[in-house]
Length: 542
Image (cartoon, rainbow, N blue to C red):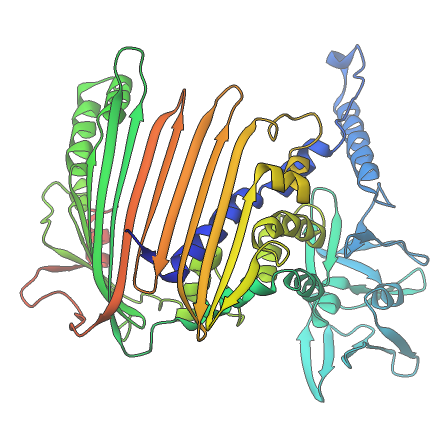
């Protein structure tokens, strides 16, 4: 039986797949559920002046903002946790690129108790967690006191007085007390989100999966130890034709050593392009281009790449026959040396990237809530509302309601099993994502998803996942994915088959184990090494 690379690879696959598909759903839903604009254009539009077109555009823009619920369709609006604010004193304005809001209205809206010191011309706002912020009229320095420690924030716009009211640059004040601040330039909307509260709310629905994430992070490679890693994969495609089938395939192997931030990797790729090259050849218009195409596809028959990364020196060495594309006289055995290479992320950051498909920002601890919130920051609409909607979908696969936990002896098993019928029964959320009137969900004829993970003594022993789906409609297709894992080995298989798309298969195997081999610090003595700067100066890579 084939097995897959530890729990991390499986969970990475699941989370990446869910986010790639689910992450697009809120935007898709918004796009299809927003009322379409119906505008009657004047019969003499050909004679419109520039002013006529600008007025028409302003009208459309205003109607869109009214549909969004903006209280000030002709001006700047502020949304706090998905609800638009209204202002009794003075409306928001933009000064030097910063949105300015009335001090008392803004700070009280985000939970502050405001006191004004007329003598010192200073406002203070105290928040429930004990944070106090001080701002003096005319000063660009914001003072923030937390847990008895005072810090200062330099603002690029100082508070000012307008129509007898003090206006403050809202971004600096909101961020000082932990709010996420976004700006929609098209609609002129400030989005204020209590990100921590949204993340806590979502994480409360994913305690089991968050526990599995934390176990995966604990499976980090031990500092100072060397590990051997390997991967073998094969991708094959068949394009169905009326008289014959056309094929193409690729096979890859990767092996290497890794220790902390240093590594040595050798990768080989073997490509049999067949119908891909036929398509490219059909578009070639001259002999010179044809020669270049032939050279590229000749190289693709076997591509090799070697990489050595030395963390202590901050250097990287690369060797590949692809470099001959930049210089016909290039020696395939020569290395290119790159200086000042930034260090790899630490192990937790790497694991977090694998688990979520997202680069991290140094913040410790990866949770479902943090990942969903980050994916939902699309720049359109309330990030919190978008995150909650995406969480509703992912909950069907990873939420505590469906990812059930059982125990036999010392072994804890987590399992979720869903079909199209159960998804429609327990949520019906997927269909809602595609908007009213769409038959996309109805075209799903079959959907079976099953995931099982086993844990003992704080370690994930093994895991398995399967997905089997069939979609009808104008372009019917079937897809099947299976993966299995234990601590050191693994595999994944996928097959996509359609009446018009042909067949695509993917088969991958992974390994990782502790090794006593020496990790090279650079190329072997006597190997040719060329500095990247030298190549750039000679123009070989320019």
